[in-house]
Image (cartoon, rainbow, N blue to C red; front, side):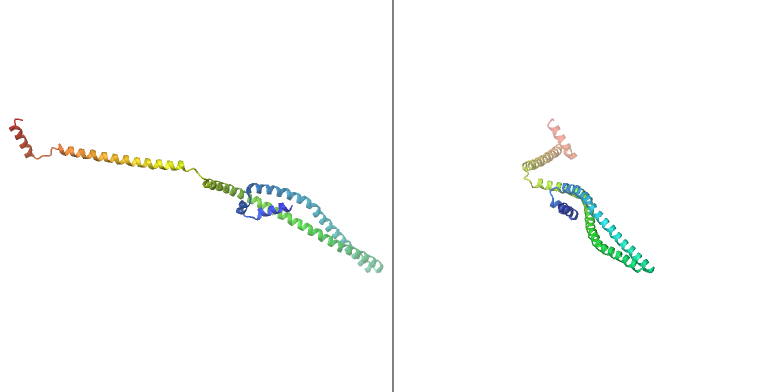
Amino acid sequence: MASIFERMATIAKANINELLDRFEDPEKIVDQTIADAKVEYAKVKKESLSVLANESVAKKELERLNAEADKWHGIAASALKAGNEGDARKALEKENDYRTRAAKQEEIYGSAKAASDKLRAKLREMEEEIKEMESKASQIKAMAVTAKATKAAAQMTDKAVDRSAFDAFARMEEKAGKQLAEAEALENLNRNTDAEEEKDLEAKYATGGSVATDDALAKLKEELGM
């Protein structure tokens, strides 16, 4: 019984992070502990019936003895009022006998009640701890799942990953970028060359000469028979 109480107290009183650190599989531990606690609680409650019944019996016996003592005290008083002192003495002896027995029964009842109170306190403690565990269970499970995922991700990051593929991809990306830049530069160069040729050709055959020059050229052709 001690072990289940200790385990219940550990889970009920610990915070969630402590449980995650303390147990490898807190979800399973919590579920199993709750199930075990409920079985243990039912067992303790069943065993407590005899203790609680003993308290009840002891209390009833104490009440009976006190009632008898009170009854004989009344009889003694009635006998004395009737002037029968001898009967009064006998009644008082009966009362004293019941008072003595009641005093002993008081001790018996006190012990039985102390045992019952202790048992009731333990049952209440178990009930509260079971409720506390049940209220924490969903939080513990959710956090445990998150913790496992985080741990798995961290472990994957920590593993020696083959970087060759990533490095090759980076080199290919760099090379492709360089080739693209070269192609763009060549395209720009060709574009500039074509533009310059167009300008030269346009300037070469431009018809923007003066009218006097044109007349002189025509006259020269006429002289040469052209």
